Length: 257
Image (cartoon, rainbow, N blue to C red; front, side, top):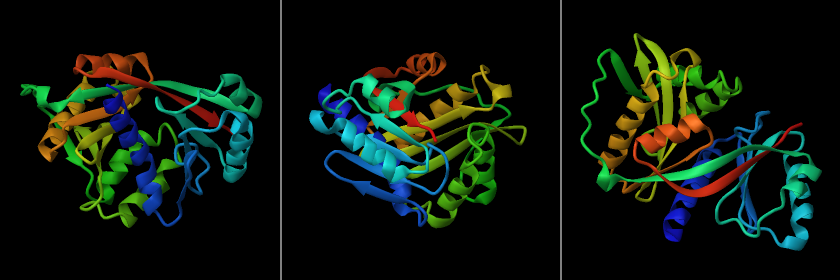
């Protein structure tokens, strides 16, 4: 199980690192204690630090350095199941961090994926290939953060979609974008991210249908396992219904300006 947790954590970490390492306006930095993804956008969605492990006696000093690196931008700080030692929450509180989420890691072994008989009827699922498709994807995501538009248009314009490990998808109902998600392929594993449904379309089974499609896509691509994280009860319930099992815990803190 520990080996599988490490594979999951590496998939999630590499997902966070990949796009910023390719975009001209973004940068990445890595040392033995953490890696950093920095963008010019004033949002913690694209400014991220992942803690690998910090010496106990230098935790506050290193976290203060990270705050200065991102200054004046807000950023998210992730702690995975293999981060050591455990950092006391009071240290984060003293430095001005706010706990954003407790994320539950989950996994699915694709050899157990069954043939689905789900009917999509008037629904269609598109893979983002051009600006028109990307704008549909963005229209769902930007409700949560209006700064995503420029970032994802840069992704489309600067990264060759045929050679990169990301895939973006949008479920369409009567020409309206309803639900989105993205896949990230790492070695023979797949991570599912950004599973979001427009507010007026929630609790109608659209995310479930999109997930079934994505799980089949990942299997056909050659992946052996799918990894993801869930922070809400609704997400945890959805993924459990789909057959995902729990796999490690993650914490996300935010430093706001």
